[in-house]
Image (tube, rainbow, N blue to C red):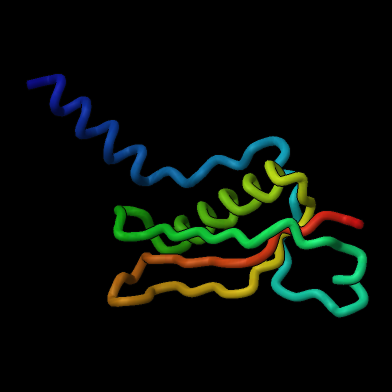
Amino acid sequence: MKIPLFILAAMILTSCASTALSPAGGHVLIVQSMSVSEMQGYRNLGSLTCEHGWNFRRAFTNVNSCKNELRNETADMGGSVFLIETWLVGANGCANCVEMEGSALAPK
C-alpha cells in the first residue's frame, strides 16, 4: 500500500510544478507589443503555441509555465525575443486553462 501512496504523492507534486526555464530560455525576452521600427530589426523564426490547464495548478502557475515553455522553445530555435500575439485565460469553462500564441524572433 505504500507504493501506490508514493506514486499518488509524486503525481500530485509534479502536477503543481510549472515548466522549468532552461539556461538559454532565461535569456529570451517576452514582449506583448513591438513598434514597426523595432520589428524591422528582427526576423520571424516561426509561430509557437502553448496550452496548459485542466490540472491542479492555479491559472497563474499555468501562465508562468506557458511563458517558460515558449521562452525555452524560442531559445531552441535560436531566437532572443518571443512576441505574444494572443493570450487567453479561463476559456471553455476551465478557470485555470491558459492558451498563448506568438512568434519567435531573432535579430537580423
